[in-house]
Image 1 (cartoon, helix red, strand yellow):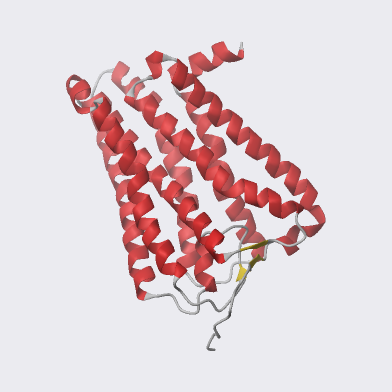
Image 2 (image 1 turned 60 degrees about the vertical axis):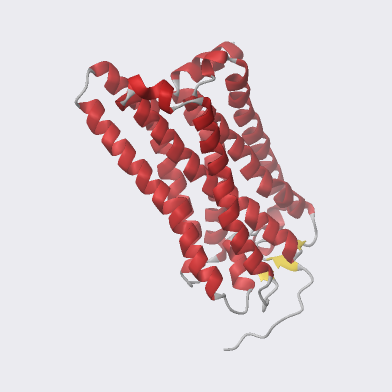
Length: 304
């Protein structure tokens, strides 16, 4: 059946009808979680900022990851909280595309930051004598710029291409503007389809493969080494692997929703989307705060 082009002024988010009766409960829960995300991430960031012994590449990358989590959450939560209290959940197409741009820029930055952290751990454990030479402040700075700039450039192409697309629907099937924006378009352009695959490969698949390869090599080297090196590898690499595995699982779901044209039940879609925006920003500070020895030590001093 051919879809007819619409003159769309406002877009409606269709998730509200499922939770209308409990919107104030959801508002309280999501507001509490947002404050918790801001406070926990900011606490670890503060500890890294004030303690000079944490001004090392590994902790700088952790700080960047936590800052990314705060920005990532701020892209979603404020608008969501406003929607809980509003009679109508509407947005403009331009505002929707801006949220799409910031959400995927920050989401993909996480993969590149995790890749930089994997490289840092590999050099620290497998090439300790070259660590100071290879991981200078300039190198760390370049990694951070690339981690945020490359995804921004990739996602900008998709957002700009979507801005010129004809719309045949004004109802977003989701709780915020992620891949659901593609379902509004009458026809997905070849540029969006092809460049979407390029972005997927560049920003998620290649970094994931690099991380898995790096940690596999690192664990092989540490397994053949002394007990102290094995312990160091486990202490510093395990948190990164936990973050990567959990984040990858939800990212695969988010991409699959857009690429596979199947009608997921609305409630299932809402629950999975909530997990995408909740788990990672909330888990990161706990994983790094409890598992990283130096951060945990300073955190205990702060709390006591």
